[in-house]
Image (cartoon, rainbow, N blue to C red):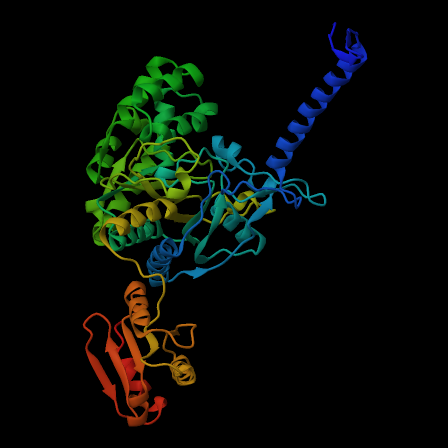
Length: 516
């Protein structure tokens, strides 16, 4: 490279070639480029203070809950817990993680969704997938053979989340289970009654409770020609009928599971059937099903179940559906699932939409499920002693999705339970307000005061209206001289004075004015 440079020298110009200077210039350019890259990297990982710049988002399949959402959640929990207690249940708790071997082999094809933890001091651990397997482990470990319990806690599944359908990777389950040796179908019928009560009280819309029996399914598979070693695999495929059309389910049976089209078509004839006690009676006379003792035992129990459901007055919502499979391996008898039929569209939470691809609003679908699992406890007992169990799990997150959507369009949700706001009409009354609110707190009244020495009365009243506080106790200089405290009903602005000299004397009267 020749660089011509003119140098003034006594009126003459000189031409020189200096490759060394050119190389130096190129090095400077390379250094500048590298410095620019380092500055860009520094901007990405942190500022001048060296602090890491975190990406502010929740992990995939999880979400935060704001005060309004938590108020709705608490209301739903109270409804469910009240129902569980009404039916005589007591509660327990178990660790959020279990030994990996405790959970392995209990969930069929869904076992791949279990969260495994890193080795901790020689123990291989996994986050619990549901509350049923830990409950069975608890019974076997403590040698319990008779209990009616409920358990509300978080579980974890490495699933593909669908926020619009209330499906997350971290979510609550609300379980009710009856363990013990009892006469057939009585506890099972009570579990269905509980589902009916909860969904009716929450007023989520029309629903149906589908019931079937694992023995009926296994008998059906046998008489249709399914090999014994494919029962569980085919059961998991049938379980997809609520998400896929029959043609796609059949294709999976034939192409992936290795069934012949003839066998798949026989299964298709049965899984399309729905009814009640009459369907069970008809299948008992069916030329194929009647050949299976297992299927006949299940059909007889379905008849008995419906007779109890009639007494519980819930048969209007229950349907015997042969397509119901529930893919979990531990079910041994009756199985059931509650589905909302008019839930409508439920939009994804706002926090789930940020930075995520758009997802169509869809109906929520299944909101409860369960069944009988008589052999699960025996899998943990050293001597294999079985404890018959039946239970139901309420799909609480999906219910929350509907309740939140309804609250957005139809009602204002209070996020606190404050009953009385202690306010002042003039300045320099902080001490009097603190004395009054102390009396109210000591009397068990939920009360609040603004954290300012001299707040404006209008600001205090606006806070009551915005927060839904029903009553405001107003203190003023003249009122204090007269020994009076004004109690105002925020909604109507009606004021009721008390002419007592000390606050404790009117506390009882105040409680009578507080709305339920």
